[in-house]
Length: 588
Image (cartoon, rainbow, N blue to C red; front, side, top):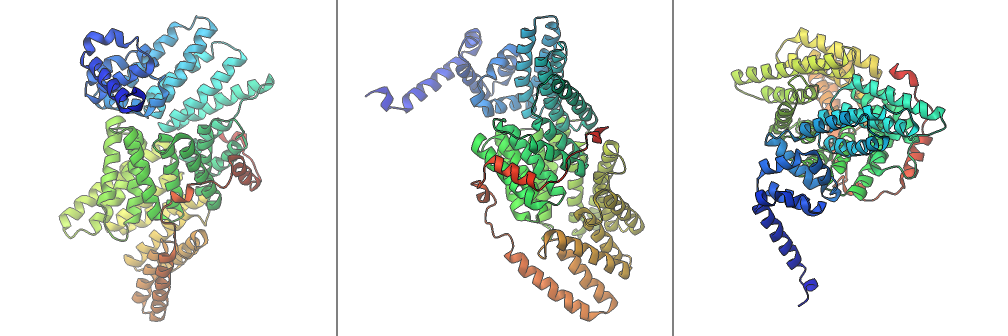
């Protein structure tokens, strides 16, 4: 029988041969390096599968070897498995490779331009892999070396390369919360863009503006982020890499969400999810990136149950690709923790949310310094969960211990936020509001009032009087006045304001209305206005019926199986709705 009719035989023989090479690794090591890239990769992957991580680390720590491993681009997800296993094992392969590349760049500084160009191109591949894997500090070192090589020649080609370096550098600095350095990187990129323009050359700005949008969003400069996302969308053209298009659509969607432009956000993120799945596949990290932003959209439009499901899918993908103690896995754990906390807020079942919050903190503290900004949000989420567990606890000693732990976490988060963003920032205001709720649980009512008022003042000045974040803080202050300080007139006014904002933004079925309605029922009971008690019992009953009918989509992913529009149509639809552009002076 012909071998072609026995498809399983070549595969079995091949695997047997790979295993034989690995079994005799010490004797065949030199011969392995002469094998074609794909076969050599399979040998290295077999080393990983057999747990021979010391041998694998010895191979991957050599820059020339790893350069050839990177050429097997169709097996990149398997390479992530191997790489993460080495990092978890204590082999600092990321920093070893970054340092080796940096030394090589210093050696070739006086070499011909084509030698430098070859090194830069490899640096983009190496740095891109390290960035994709979440090792931002090491990726930054690689891209800085590329940038230094690019600046050695004052020519058009090297200006283009410098711009590309800056875009990649800005991405890793955003990922590592180095926002001030990110701003400087953007300014440098703009200077090279201007130099190219003066000499009649054009470089597409979509990726650069998309990264700037991400930076401004992270700093809670939402108006500026929105303006720059418009500029990024204008730069989307035929032939642009799909990855760039997906990332710009993602960032634009998030900018629309915080501006409460939900229809625009929905169209953008659904198309980004569709593009990522069609181009990269359902097991690719880029697809998980879009899912996290889709979950963010769903959470913000009050489709909480579906957001939990989407976040879980994103986490599953990242764990399957990276596994181990990886920063991308940590951020997915954190997002799932918060959405699970919101989803289970009424039931009080927080075990799953707490697990994911603690997992996120464990991973981040294993990888990054204890004062890293990424810990602020993870600690905040855990503190919120602990507070709710403490409130439901019937053991006084346990309650006090949990509240104290929550306090320490909130205080640490606040300090990190103030250090990074200053006092006058939405993130700082959120932490003040969280402390206000905690002080209320700790029965420190004056301190709670002070924190809530401070949060409201900052949010109103930054976001306006009618923003969702303002409504949250107003509702929390109303609860404090109603349940603990007997300031019923103030509480009633604040509840009504919170309800008005919630209805305006999300409609009559908004989940947050439940707590305001229940608060008013308690308030009117306290003051003896039973007519109003009856009225709001009916309002709450109608709200419950409306919630039962809301969000009929059984699976949010089924909703993005097909895209009715081409990318250019999505872009044009978005741009036609805009009427202004950015101010170049926003970064001074």
